[in-house]
Image 1 (cartoon, rainbow, N blue to C red):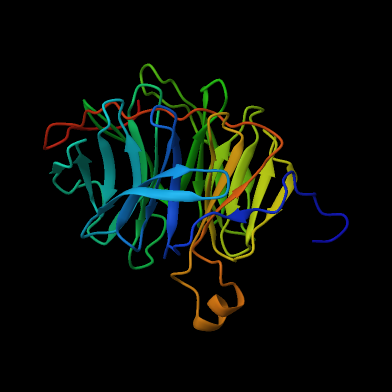
Image 2: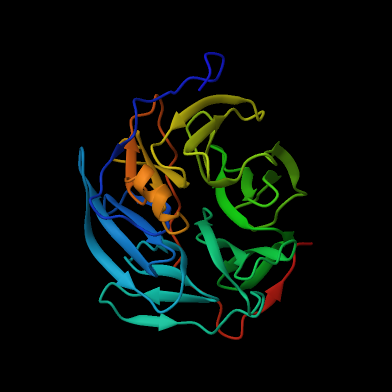
Length: 311
């Protein structure tokens, strides 16, 4: 980093897992259970773990037979897991209810990052398995159906809300755009999207929003997390000792710890040797707090889902 570059708002991140994950993603802090939820997309699993001072202890692991793009937790302890083209419910007793493939997800696509809104709807994007771009979608899944929010994305990725909940931020990793739009949590209606950030020279991945409305975005391939103010100005950079930073989340009882997920699955042997911590989950101590996440409602459309598009 050059002397004129933005400085880091944290001490160097520390690896808190012994395990290495092929593609760790989607960290979410659950305040009810005081546990961290995250997935390993290529490892086809989701995890719940206890975050200690210098260790993330895996307590529960759920394995699946398809890529796991994202997961969310309901207040009753059920998990919603986006697996392949399906949404699977895992009850607290371990019982699974696998939904039918959602037709709005292409046969050569899969679910990717997801987040819940304040009414428990699940917003989840898609990514192509064979490199097809400009046809990926951002969907809003509620008890009354599935709404298409976007259908022209390259690779739908990180999602988050402003502190007042009135703005939805969404990442399109290819070509590197961060969008913003108005969002009504009561009705689920959205406004027109506008470009907040043009990061065409980088690959933005997962994101989190802090108490001041600043966006913390994992930059895949750069080994960095960038912090942008609400106007889109780069204000800080956190360096991570592995190139494939994938996502971020604020965690801990005070939401004052920054969890950073990474991956090794797309690295060569030489690249892994040069960055042996790749695939670890890291924790940094930021100079701010994050925002609470919203729980899943626990309800999905009765198949076949009714498809709605925004008015």
